[in-house]
Image (cartoon, rainbow, N blue to C red; front, top):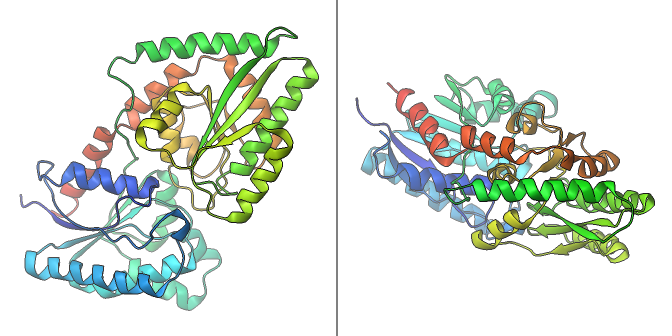
Length: 389
């Protein structure tokens, strides 16, 4: 059987976010040909940093045209026949980019793969798009040879474009934990008992509970709600006479200056948070290992399958998050730390009660069974191999 020859038109980090990281794993994991596919990568990086994502600039158009020329050259000089592309969420500038790229490239490639990392484009097409926008989008993205989705939810959203074949391929990351994970799980268990006892007592020595928020620091990703829920949880503890206190660490970049100003204003009144900005892999892993709880109260409209939750599960770190998009599909069945979006009181209550259960082994096992990078690449390669026979 001839190997599918796939041109990957997508960017690797920087900027650093879940989608670009998954492209990195794809290119690094499948480029040697041992998986049964051949990969040619056009690193279509348009944004200089996190604050540049989604912004329209004339320079981006020129760069985009250059990447299109590289793709067409690979098609006709190297005979790559499959065009792999990650569609935009329902944001005007990003949708226009998709129209341009696929309008210029799709005619040249016999097959199109769309890999959906975000949710919302299908909903936009059915509810908000104008007739001419629907026609353009169906012309550019409709009837793809293969649609790859992270979950059933993203597959349902993408189905309006009527792909010929559809597969669910969950994300996956390399295991950040040393091969012997028992010391980590034992330490988590001992800490869970300590924190449960601390949260139930009145008086005594104070104890700090470390809460980690790691994501792009935007309002809809939940950075303001994370701060407010930590403040609310501490208020409840104070009223109970409990000396324990939550302390928030924020790791990520603020995109909107207004969000940063509001965060700093609230924090200046309560002094419960520290902002570290973007963390490299070593410092990020150290924060995951040292933290007691991961807090991610997102209601981002285009949330797909957040890698930060996968990372937290890999570290066996108890999670409080929102019942939003495909997030409940990521966590173990019946997981207790999920609340409705923008419910500060419910977030605080979950933070106070989550240590009643020993969740680390369940989270760690969920990662090992479903979200390792090896499993991701195996499922992805099998989908690519068998879709173009």
